[in-house]
Structures are given as structure tokens and as C-alpha cells.
Image 1 (cartoon, rainbow, N blue to C red):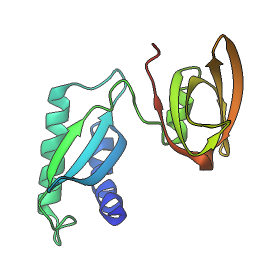
Image 2 (cartoon, rainbow, N blue to C red):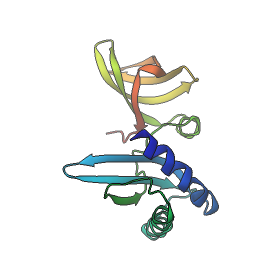
Image 3 (cartoon, rainbow, N blue to C red):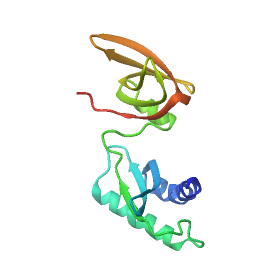
Image 4 (cartoon, rainbow, N blue to C red):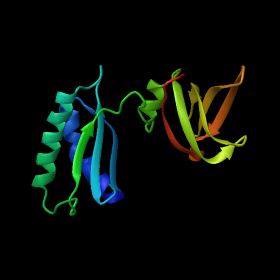
Length: 157
């Protein structure tokens, strides 16, 4: 499956760059009996449904023209915005999220928990530091990036 993601990323990146869109994330997964290829795209100021439809048409044409087919099984192509809870994967995502409220899921527990939410205080290639509110106190916690399974923007309640 990773080869599908790598191949599709190489194919769609020039299309997105040419049209000033950013590839935020790409998924190829099976849900029930169906396969889905999902592209999450964005641009400065946000993206609307017409732009998603436009990118879907361009990507669909590009994938259909490939020989051999990079995805031999039947699949559904979905193109959408990453939404308010945008994933943080690249360094530029973390830079943009500096000071923002984020959610992280860990592979291994830290202080007995695998999920934390807080304000992104700082980050390095090796660590992510959050200001986490625990009951009435704010605690600064640093997490090893190798232990972060997923990170995303979060909505604070």
C-alpha cells in the first residue's frame, strides 16, 4: 500500500503545485469491501468544494492515463479539505501550528496516558513540547516525536 501512496504522491504533486494547492495528506485504505484513495488538499485562505471537484477531475484524468495502472483494484477517489482538525505531518505543519491547540496520540503512554491536548509551545526534529492543562494547572510536557502516532489541530472545548 505504501507504494500506491508514493506513486500517487509523485503523480499528483505537479498537478497540485501548478494550481497552487498543497497536498496535506493522502490515504489509500479499505473500508468494508471498498477501497478509497483520499487526497486532503489546502491552499492559503482555505479551499471550497468547487476546487475539490476540479482537483478530483485533474487527478482522475492523470491516474486513468497511467499505464500500467498504479492502482489495479477498483477504488473511490475522494478529494477534500483537511478540515478544522488538520493533521500535522510535515515541519511546515508544525510551524503553522505554533501556539495553536493540538491533539497528539502516542504509541507508548507518558505519565499513564496516550492522548494529550494542549498548546504547541515548541518543536524540534526530535521533540514536541505542549502546554497541557491538567485540572487547574498548566504543565509543560515534551514528547519524543518517535512516540507520536498522530498529531493534529484540535478544537478546544
